Length: 418
Ligand code: ADP
Ligand code: ASP
Ligand code: MG
Image 1 (cartoon, rainbow, N blue to C red):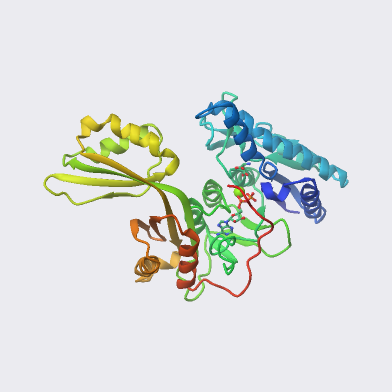
Image 2: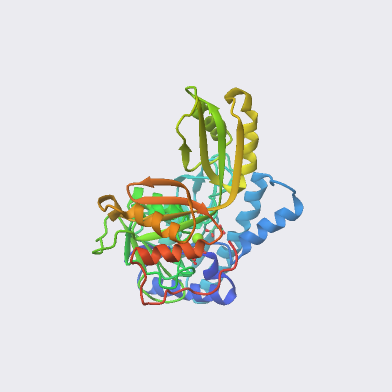
């Protein structure tokens, strides 16, 4: 008998019919002799709809605590309906919110990290032969405040619960049948990866591949959780995410990801003094702004230029902070540019293969697009470029690195938002 965690995303439970189909899938797993904990997201576009509703009430940024109170209702609807659907099929089921499941988080509304899980209620229900349905994406602080884990965070709930209850397997059911070499909605010839290493998956997730939440991968790596991504729409083999994988001959790049809505800020004419870079980035860090790629030009006549990238939503806030330290730094000018994207190639094989970066720059430049900024690690190269033709760039890179296949990628239904 195995103990498994099964996670279903929003599109898998988008309406009553889908909810019933998911319930059937869960009951099948139970009747195969497994003990099942299910983690579920809000139905379809519920989270987006709730965000829209808050915008109708509040101009600007809504209060973070109340936003978490609002958004967690989405998952609460799902757990209740899914438990009912399972009970209709003749199995015992019980729904628990994040806090009832003993999921404790840090006190950071909107992007809280899980700090501890005390799953005794979940274990008791399992011992009672019940299927346990846990709300994804939510937890509670030590002080009893309700928090959420960031968009896409139900994956993290699933992996964290799997680690806490020492599950044999954590299955992430979604609307594609595995992890592909790139988003199969963009490239129809994307290839499904039978397996991928935690490190490569972590890079892809961090660089924008929505199929797994980055923290879920971090958690899985750290706790050695057996993780598989598969479809809730069919029974195809999924993709196993694991420690070590067999590298396919000749494949240097395993995946391509992209992140839209990137901006660049440049601070020009910065008098060369020690501590200038530190002063700028400390000021930005103090207000929790996430700065990504940083480039500093050479010093000319005692003056340097800095540029950095950041999410486009944060530009205004960052510019205000920089204006606030203008006198202290003494720079000449600050400029910004929005509408950029970050496109990244990831592969454990690239560290020992020369020419990988050169090929990337060549492919992008042949499309008549210039590369604004570059960052690299042992297993990835990211370029920040103009964002007007993302699909063309991804398709061209996919072909150039030999990733196109003949087999049509599986995509289960449309996805209009997010
Ligand atoms: P869920 O609601 O099940 O959590 P998500 O929308 O969060 O689903 O994640 C699944 C989506 O991730 C797919 O529909 C696909 O468009 C996107 N995606 C992006 N990159 C990849 C990739 N490399 N492999 C598979 N899917 C990807
Ligand atoms: N419902 C949340 C979201 O839409 C969490 C999740 O789907 O994982 O982001
Ligand atoms: Mg998701």
